[in-house]
Every structure is written in structure tokens, then in C-alpha cells.
Length: 343
Image 1 (tube, one colour):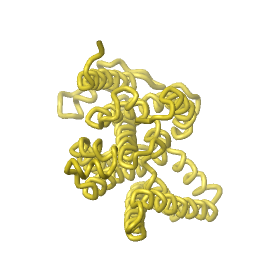
Image 2 (cartoon, one colour):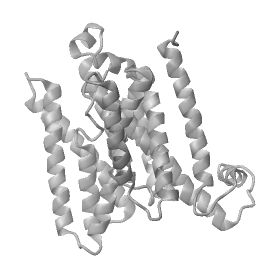
Image 3 (cartoon, rainbow, N blue to C red):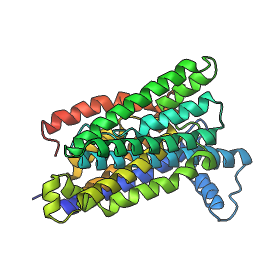
């Protein structure tokens, strides 16, 4: 006799939390220079207000200023993209939806490409990417609602997102065409492929924590309403769900997380598309369980992939390439197992 869904979901969340914790510990230990777990723990405790670690300056710098921001960024970005993808797939009732559906990634790409083209500082490029990502989704939502009156508003919103994403792609191509091929062009290309190698504590990591937390909050609070909404607007309205309010809050929350993640790590594909499918396969479509499972799976997946890039590969390969190489065949396996039904 199988366990009830709630019990199975709780067990899955607990197992994933343990696996993620273990992977974080291993990530600190592994690297070009290996460190014993005890030294890593002492350095982290010291910087969190504890006693002095006694570590050499180079070891302290490597653990706290290089490995810690990159590891935490992998966890935050992976969880954000997976949670946003899960929410969007439920909201739009489409298994092929990803967090960049409404143009967040494209808009962020335009902002970053513009900043790099104009030789702005790294923090300014991140701010531009975040702001343009929000602006692109705001344009999609505003135009979609304006032209979709009396029609299928969800379909109109999706189509408007495709148009905005295409426009952003054209602007990025223009920026690459105008960029110096020896300087700005490689920077734009590398940023668009995604990566965590340039993440710093104050420059990249800390600025995205608040937007990700604010974006995750409405998804967590509204996960029951979103589950009901995924069955159809009419059924949700019958059960007392304010469909317009929930739709707006979910889009705002997912956009904040996606724009923040992309502004810090570049465009990392497939996480927000594949991981939600794996989460539903493990615990079902109820977002009360699927959302936390997807967030943990996304964090674990991106952290493992980044460890492969950082430790096993001889050169720093953009992480977006590896997520695509892993995500595409894995997605085909998931589709084969699920058949036609995604719910």
C-alpha cells in the first residue's frame, strides 16, 4: 500500500533537503585546492560572528569570497528558475512553458548587452539586466491585456510574450553586431550562455536575495489557488479563486525571481523547463508539494552541474551549455515516461 500523497511529498522534501545539504558541503570541500570540512566550517562560522578560524588568509579568501558566493548563487538561481517554471506551467497549463515565456530572460539580455556595449561596470550591468527583464514582462502583460479584451487572454498573453522575446532577441543581435569583436562581443556572448564563475558576494549575490525572496512569497502563499487555477479558470472561479488577482501575483513573483536570477548568472536554460516535470513525476501536480520539491531539485541540479564545470572540466565552460546538454535528453526521457499527459 502506497503512502498518502502528503506523506510521500514530505518524505521527498526531506530527502532532497538532506541531499542538497550534503552537496553544499561537498562543494565547499572540492576544488583545485581541497579543504577539510572542519576548516570550511571554522571559516564560515568566523564570518558569521563566531570565533577566529585560524585559517591562512588565502584559504579564508578562497572559501568565503570565491566558493561561498558561487555555491549559494547556484542554490538560489536554481531554486528560483525551477520555482518560476513550476508556477508558469501550472498557470498557463502548458508543459512546454519556461520562466522566460513572457520575455524576462530576453529583456535581461537586452539590458546586459547594452551595459556591456557601453562599458558599464559589472554592478551597473546587473542592474540594467534586472530592470530590463522586469520592463519586458511589464510590456508583455500591458500589451497582452490591452489587445486581448474579449478573447482568450491567456493565449494572447503567451503570444505577446513571444513577440516581445523576439524583439529582445533582435535588439541583442544588434548589440552583438555593434560590439567590439575583441572586447565587448566575447563578454556579451559569454553572459548570454550563463555562468556562475564571476559571482561575488556583494556585487552579484546579495542584490538578488531580496527579489528572489519577494518573488517566492506569493507563489508559496498562493500555491493552493494556483493548483486550482491550473484546472481551468471556470473551475477556479467556482471555488472562489480570484483568477485575475492570482494570475497577476504569480506573474509578478515569477518575474522577480527570473529577472534576478538571470541578472546575476546570465541566461541558464532548461532548469525552469525540465525540473518542474521531474517534481510532478515525484509528488504529483499539487503545488503544495510540487513547488518546494521543484525548488530543491532546481537548487540541487544547478549546484551539481556547476560542480562539474568547476571541478571536473579542464576549462570553465558556460554553465548554460552543460544544462542544455543534460536537460535536453533528460526532458525526452521524462516525456517518454509520462506519455501524452503532463498532469
